[in-house]
Image (cartoon, rainbow, N blue to C red; front, side, top):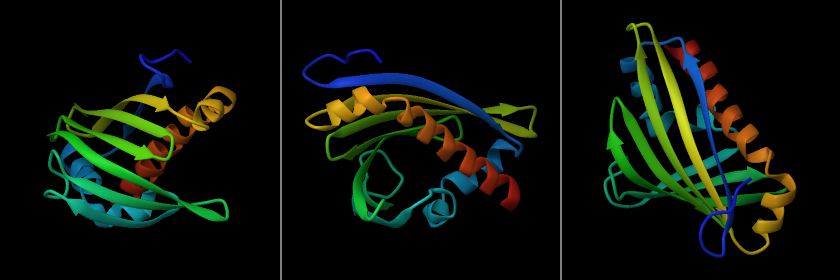
Length: 155
């Protein structure tokens, strides 16, 4: 884990997976908010807050089941250049995640998804990030693999 400028502790990592689906179909499934509950484990609701959903500047509220409670996260779309890229920020109490996604066409038969993540922590979450930092890459990769399983079954 490396420090991020300012008073926030943080980490950066990149991950990639190959989804055996043409990029066009991959993007159709990825870009449909109705599919989120089918691959984002614990997602209870997705609610647009402002802007045009899925477009840069749009803000949406996501509510996840977490243990015996819930966790609210705000998604802000920062770049939409589909089918090549889709970026956003994700904010929850004490955590700011910048996620930059690349989607690479592999000979028209598969898609390589590369996700670059920066996590910044504040308050109590600095301690969680320090003690349990390895859980963030594992959770991100699990989410990517959940999408892969979903997409390959529904492709």
